[in-house]
Length: 208
Image (cartoon, rainbow, N blue to C red; front, side, top):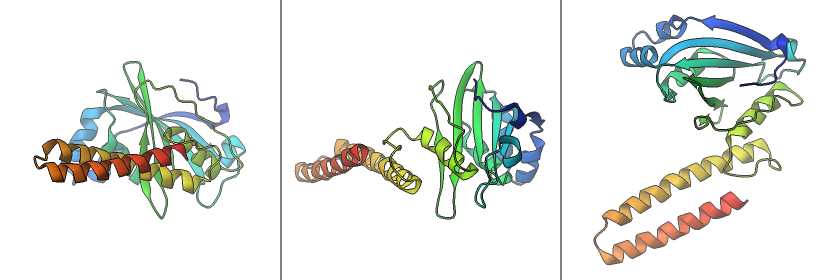
């Protein structure tokens, strides 16, 4: 794992798990999940104007890079949400388990919050470059979006299209399940037509 980040941004600082579990003390189930899934948390890098020379913006002042060493080969989505709520900066998560690696990041704006995850040992190349830290953050999120070509689109359009594709994929699965269960021929025909329309819309978005 080589992120090609400057030494000036390196922290490599251990973070006690209690920093996060104390904040969710009333949620015993979440606290237990945190304990069962997280072995160690390391604050690897802090990307700021001072450590990278890349200007900050009002929206993104810093970007953090955390390594979560796991006790199980799972993506701890609830734990990531807890950490995200606790830290007021965007975070790129590096998830490790017995030599395997996955990545996660959360998009959080006034309009939307959405989580992005890689597969285990998926080849991911992050670009920590941009005219400011907000653009760096956007470029990191673009790396997670493989459903469409993101290079020639503004960031808001990329995110909007990706969310539409994800929703359409869920709708396709839902209709396929309905069709399998439906016994009446006429209803099955109508459902199939709706399914075809959804698949056509999905293909058009993926080609856009």
